[in-house]
Length: 329
Image (cartoon, rainbow, N blue to C red; front, side, top):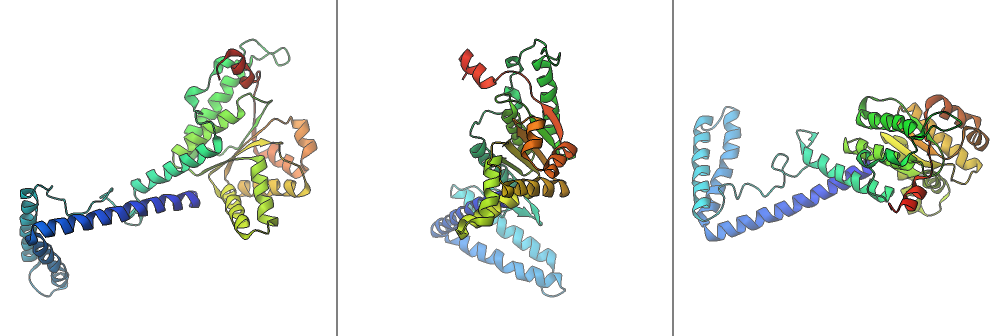
């Protein structure tokens, strides 16, 4: 899991717990003011707890006797609550999640309620990065690709993209058992970013940590981490770099649009190689051809891309231009 997003989820859960504690306190004050006997009953019930502990250690009154007394007091308490128009368990805590009492954990394990908050935080984070919001496998339209065979390859773009779509879909749905890294290659507007986003959303929905970043922003983070004189900016960049290196799935979009320098090449190699060594999965998209990639990057980077990534070639015409032409935007 992404530590930053988990921290956000924990903070949100703590806010929920604080509100629950405040509500519970107000309920007790209201109930005690109207029915003073409820305070006496709660004090009597609380007094039995240390007696039960002593009994379990072999001292004091018998445990069965204490249990019966506690049940009688609780029954009287519930009766008074109902008589005064409250639910019988109105003073048992105003928890949003009774299972963990809004702590987020049950017996040292994450409660589903905290996991749900984490998933929401990750969804918000991805939505902010993707900026589109409608990317899903269900909305991917193969009808936008030509079904006539390409003269050069003899394969229709639609047939090729149907294969690409199927690979991406299977990869996302079975992410936990997959080991592949993918390089999406093809011209502008062929659906690389869209399918990357589809994968990101589905993998995140399953609870895996996902970082979606453009190559420009990713390498800028490395640069800021290394060279920024602003301590806060450097610390923020360091956290971003660590997330990119450690997340379950990194999607690096638009490789080739960044400014190429000796440092950027070194940073890119570090990012790709560290993830490969850590057996973390990566999807990279680029408009560059194989020849352009070889010319732009070092042999070490090219070797990693060619040897460790499966290439998916995107075909067709610019979808964005086609949608605009058909008035589909």
